[in-house]
Image (cartoon, rainbow, N blue to C red; front, side, top):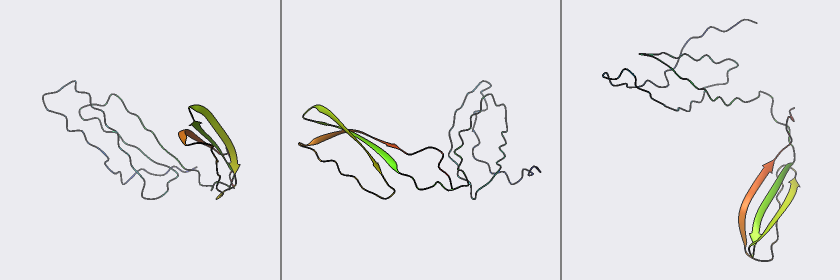
Amino acid sequence: MKMETPEHFQQIYRAQIPEDQDHWHFNVDREVMLDKRAATVFVRYVGDPGLNNIRIYAHCLDDRPRAAAPITVTHTWAENAQPKSKTVTCDPGAAYLIETESDPVDESIALAIPNGLRK
């Protein structure tokens, strides 16, 4: 496999470190979206005057589209201070209805889809 050549780096952040500091620690988080899809991403860090900690949180998308799959919804609520829940499995685009006997107080909604269904 031929490796791509890193070029056209985009500066994302540059710390403004006070000149009178020689032990200054600074944290920063940046969210960056690529202009277009890439199979390989090169990252370059420049320590000026130094770098002692790095972290990357990358969200990567699979090139293959996800197959249509049913979704399982678990809805939890309370009626008259009594806990209630209902789990339904719906096909894509479908709706579901929960009928209650009194005014509900929503607690949570959990969504689940099968893992790994790809075309």
